[in-house]
Length: 161
Image 1 (cartoon, one colour):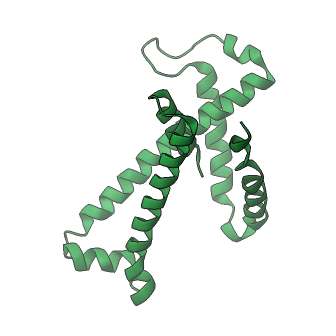
Image 2 (cartoon, rainbow, N blue to C red):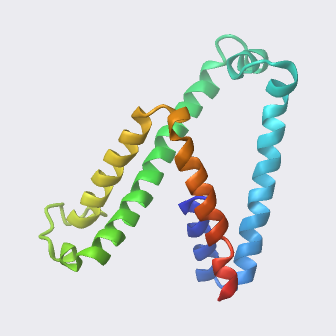
């Protein structure tokens, strides 16, 4: 469950679906994606063959550069999308703590899609994300368990509306 899931459900509601219809559509989409992801990982799980080898088998030695390049570009794009969404979330939290952040003078150009407050949120989000990327994954086990506890507690919350 990520912020993009909430964006998808709220966009579906904006297009006219009810809350339950948007939840069902989002859940059905997640099931379809999970099915495709499981199928994608089957060859590696069954035959213990890595992604580069499967690329070379499917596209040839030189053709395997395309899926690798495509995957790298999509990772960069998706990192940008998550960075903007996370920056907006940080801005909303900062605005809740100090509403004066909305009164900051805008140092961005008039044609840009971001203002100073949202830019500050993006920078803070990027710094926090970079700090977590430096730390090894096994040392963050406590955070994974905390995330699970919060997730289990918050999932039923929309059902009480």
